[in-house]
Length: 196
Image 1 (cartoon, rainbow, N blue to C red):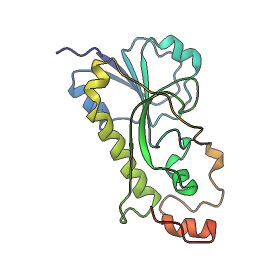
Image 2: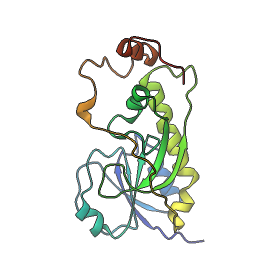
Image 3: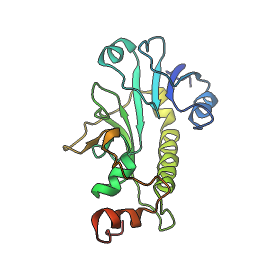
Image 4: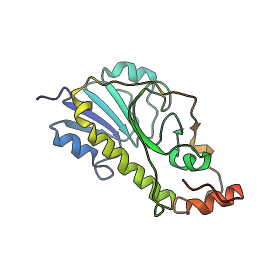
């Protein structure tokens, strides 16, 4: 059965950082990659944003003429924006991964697919838990890849206020992503955090 999607613009991580470009190509899709800021999104059947460091402006979204999906390592509507894994631990909000449509907001678009994640006791650092989230969102994307390529997709709006954070919100004294989460939260809060 032929795919509705023939060409994809993949924004963000390159093929050395994610297996998703190869997964798309394995379905016979032609993939163009870009990590730099781009304003002209036309000429593609689908646009995928994963690890992309730039905001896509409303004008570019309107002119794209294609579905634009974003892969975000958070259980939206919680922890939109920067460092979602860090803030899920800091704020005690759910951990998870979400594939959603891009709109004019930051991680505010309707949700296509999402999954809540629980970490194992061995996943002790921000690095380890982030690595797990990357693995989970890639698996979620691959699991629904035929749905995404064949379309149409059903999306549902984000429910609730959720939360949002900017790059500048990361504490200035943060020691780095290799720190053990339990110890860091104990230092910040002055008490042992509840196990998740």
